[in-house]
Amino acid sequence: MDGLENGFPFCSNPDCELHVFVGEPRVVGAGNWAETGDGRITGRGIYYGLYLCDWCAREWHAVSPRTVGGW
Image (spheres, rainbow, N blue to C red):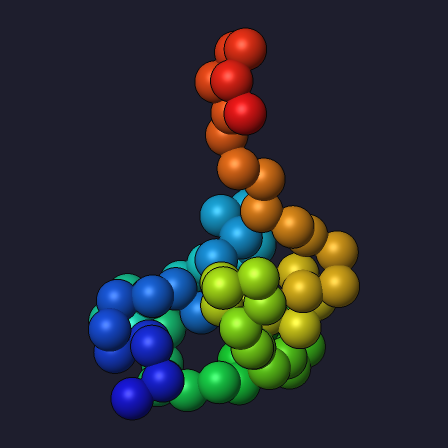
């Protein structure tokens, strides 16, 4: 199992078009490679403890929320 079957999105970036889950109507198949609607192909990996597609791994980083006055 690669995580998709465990309920993780293909890409953890909520703004990414590949923030999709196995079983959604527009998702065909499962695995560590994806093809977008415009024909781009990308892989994914675990970066900073999150699944990220190759594009987001280069450009996006999760930010931890902080409370005012606390670290």
